[in-house]
Image (cartoon, rainbow, N blue to C red):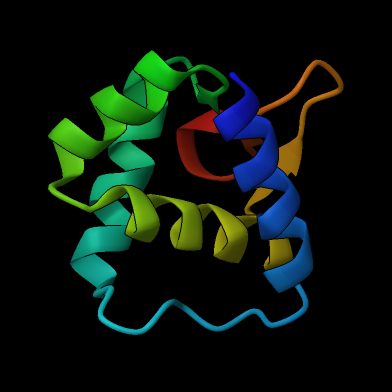
Amino acid sequence: MSRICLALGLIGLTAACALPPDGVSEADLARYDSAVTSLGCTLVTEPDYLAAGIQTGLTREQLLEVTAYKLSSGGAERLPEGGIKLTTGACA
């Protein structure tokens, strides 16, 4: 759990730019959205991130970068108890 907190803290530092991460395609972003939607629209725990990684084929680093992108572009919001919630598409 502390890894997730640290990772989300790092996401906050990189959230200033709203450009998709290098090496992540539009198809990857769509798979990310689909995976997070299947998890109840949230990524909170380590198992959530593992499941999203399996479903998308993205590395852990790529998942964190896409999460930072979603936060900075308004496609997700931080949850008070930790983690994120998508705010677009089926999760709106």
